[in-house]
Length: 375
Ligand SMILES: [Zn+2]
Ligand SMILES: [Zn+2]
View 1 (tube, rainbow, N blue to C red):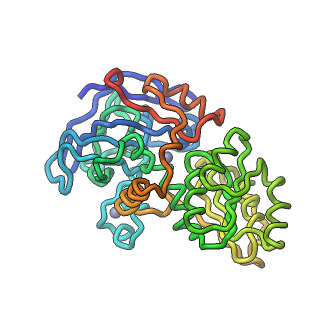
View 2: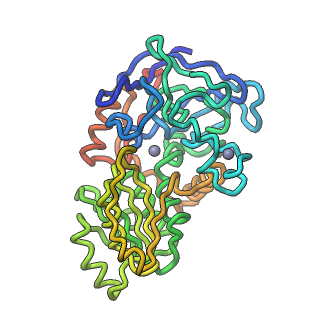
View 3: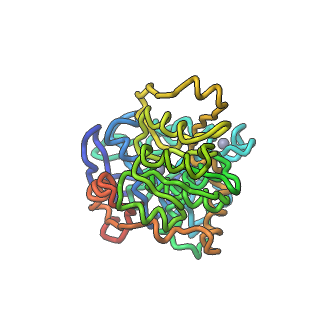
C-alpha cells in the first residue's frame, strides 16, 4: 500500500514527509489504520544519533493507536475492526521473560532497532526504493502500519484512540516507573526529575500509590503548574533548590525514591538523584541516554554505606498486555488523567514543528492526529 510517512534519512536531518510503501500483512501480522501518534523524546534520539539503529532511512514513531484493517494468516485473538494500542516492545506472551511476568523484556525485542520484521526478517516498509527501519518495529509516523501481532494490544473500542495512544509509551513508562519499578509505598517522599510526557505520569503514579510528597524537579518554569495539576506537592527548578527543602521536610532522612525521567539523561543526573534519596532508598533510571555515553557520576562511598539502590527501567517494568488495558480502565473510571497530557495536536506535515516545540519545553505531549490529508 502507498501512503505517507515521516522519514529520517540520517543523523542531524529533519523528518521528511514523503510517499512510502507499506507491505500487506504476512504470517502473524496485522495492518492498522492509525488515528494518532505521540511525539516521544525517544524518536528525537534518532535525530541526534543517541539511539543507534540498524540503518537509515528510519520511519519514526512508536506511540500509536488505531483500528485493524487487515489480518494475515495465523493471527489469533485479533480481527478487522478491533481497536488497538501499539506496544513499542513486542510481547509474545511465551518467551521466558514474558512467562515470568516481564513482558517489557520480551525476547522479540531483540530486533527492535534493527527494523527487520518478526515474522520473516524482511523489511516491511520502503521509501524511495530503499528498505526502511520502522522505529521499534512500528513506525507510527505513518497513518498505516503493518506489524506483528505481538506489537499490538486490543483495547475497549469506546476509548478515544487519540487518548489511548498515550499508553503505548509515555504514560505507562512513567506510571510503571513509580508504581512498579520504584514500588512507591504510602507515606513515602518521591523525587521526580523531569516533568515531560513520562515524568508527568510518574507524578500521577507516585500520587496514586500514596506518596506523602511528590517532589518534582523541572527546569522549565512553564511546566510547574502542569506538574501540580498532575499531583506534584512541591516543584523546584533545580536539584540545588530542592535539596535543602527536602532535607528540612524529611527531618534529614531525604526521599525514599527518586525517578529520573529527563529526556536526554546525562551521567551527572545519576549522582544528583542518588543524593536526593536516603538510606536504603532507590533511584530509578527511566530517561534515555546516548548509547555511547559510559560516564556516570556516582559517589561510591555513599552508595555502599547507605545501601542505596540504582535500577534501570524500560516501559516502566510493565506488561503491555496487562497494563495497557488496566490503565485505560483507570482512565475510564476517572482515576488516571490522560486528556490534559496532549497540549498540542499536529498534522503529519507539522511534525518538525512538533519536535521544535518539544525542544523548547512547550508541550507535555505533542500528538500527531491523522486526517484524510495525511493518508
Ligand atoms: Zn516513547
Ligand atoms: Zn515474549
